Amino acid sequence: MITVLDNLKPKARKEHKCNFCNGTIRKGEVYEKQTCVHDGDLYTWKTHEKCSWLAMELNMYAYCDDGVTDQDFQEYINDAFADLWEQYEGEVPIKPTFDQKVDIVYDIICNPRNNNE
Image (cartoon, rainbow, N blue to C red; front, side, top):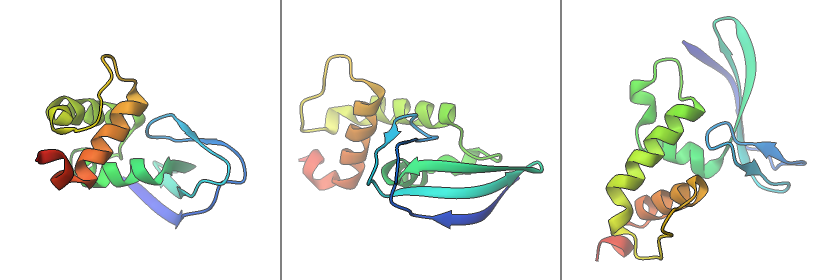
């Protein structure tokens, strides 16, 4: 089981890697930073605010007793994209990158009225 010792939302002073999507947290961007303990190991988990929000909104933690890994996150996003992409009113690339899938799923979930009409 994971114990969260600290949960912060700092502004990045340098670039970091998002532990969910593996994308870049850019300098100046507000991100989520947790200090955690799992099986006696202390570590820091950094994520984009959007990725953290999607993990909660898509209920990823309900089935991941030991936390959501980057692989879990990617699987959930790919599944959500497959289920939701037809609702998206914007242009969907023929072969979207994972970052584009994250953005599209986020846009659909944040703006369901705009995408269901």
